[in-house]
Amino acid sequence: MDKADGTETGADRKGRGRDGDRLDLENFFPYRLAILQLAVSKSISHLYSGRFGLSTYEWRAMAALGSHEPMSASQVCDNTNLDKVQVSRAINGLIAAGLVRRLTDRDDRRRSSLRLTAKGTKVYRQIVPLAQAREAYLLSVFSDEERGQLERLMDKLYARASELQRQG
Image (cartoon, rainbow, N blue to C red; front, top):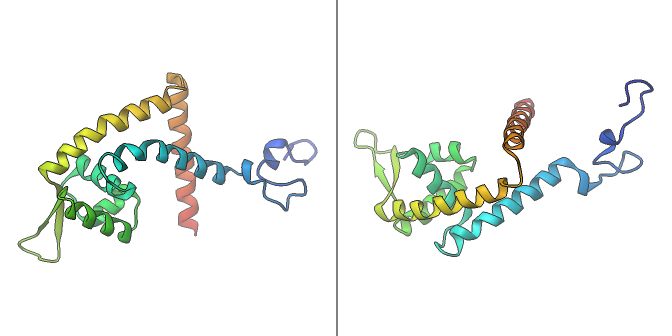
């Protein structure tokens, strides 16, 4: 709202139609963010899907394990923001491909930890520099200052979205 007369500014109207009752989808922030996320994800996914036969969820699980192993499946969920079903399918696919092994806890057979196999570590080490190069290319459109600003803005948006999630 304009502070002086109570009218909306262009920024206030962004994402809404003329009457305020229609969604201008192309300018609706959550939509634009989802489209950006999809474009970025697709620009990287062919690195691990075509050459290594991995799904997005399998790569995310591998990336988490490569950074923090050993992990439980629950920890993979927490680190990847994937749900239990997605992680279970990803882990089962990675185990079947010989990229991950599950080790059962001797003291509590209900607990297990996951680790990359030697083959999994080799694949992980091949993908990481490719993914990092793609990330660097995407971010090269920004100056160092803009990259720092982008990180701060993303952190603020994440905090606000987390707040909304807690509120329900």
